[in-house]
Image 1 (spheres, rainbow, N blue to C red):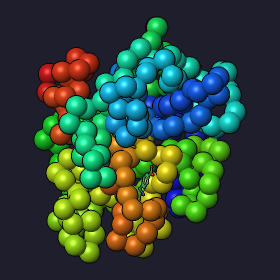
Image 2 (image 1 turned 135 degrees about the vertical axis):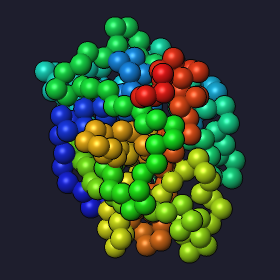
Image 3 (image 1 turned 45 degrees about the horizontal axis):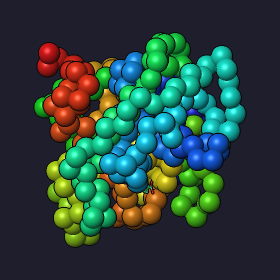
Length: 252
Ligand code: 4AZ
């Protein structure tokens, strides 16, 4: 997160930290969001092995304030039973269309606490007013030029950018599909960045937070006319239901 502030997991208790294990070393890979005690929603590009992704090389932490420290009173750690990538995820043109994936936690799944809670999926047709403010959070880099991730969970407020604006040639043109939306800062000082991928963009609807976006891509971080691009979660309620049985609020 660029231009944000240190946060605590209790204010974003649905955040998951996904780690990749190779030769007994665990490396932070991506963020994610707990949408059900057994399911984390994240980005498909977090699994560059594609269809060959091996679930047993991944683990998921919930309730984590800091990447490089363990708080055994708050944290819950899980092995991964299954990873479902969207079959139409397409990165051949570097475009990240359908950048969405589901991670199934193994065993008893998440136990709710002050630092571990699920986030709600918005109803399919839930629109947000243009210029709405939403929150992003993650353990990603604080500036594009840094080589290390943030030690602590960070959060920031971004503003939704009208679809036509983000599809204009001054912005991303046709790289932005209807499965994506853009959010940023009027002076380009706030953005998601490398390491925030897969994590949540949540917006307040009548006093309740809903997961509207998944951090997906962008050209650099906090660059003028190059805002963060997010997977449009409301386009995938059917896909999520088909793969997990979870139904978005007020549809079922
Ligand atoms: C990345 O490389 C990445 N500014 C994530 C988010 C953004 C750019 C890059 C958005 O994971």
